Length: 81
Image (cartoon, rainbow, N blue to C red; front, side, top):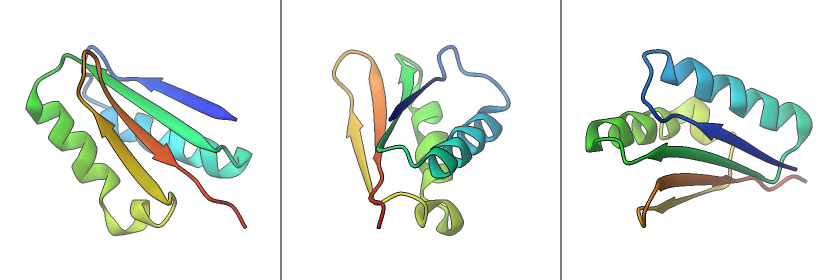
């Protein structure tokens, strides 16, 4: 299962939306979560990456992949036992 979250245009409750999609991914055992932040500023990208690199959030996924070509996206890969 692949989940998608579009954060463009940037909103104030960005962290809440990311927490909700991560919880949904864990509950549904998703393989990939795609977070698209579009052509937003570097501050938005930093907010997203800072949230995803928190200790309690980092434990949920196995790998993070960043792309900046065109629309900015972050892919979270999950590995289930």
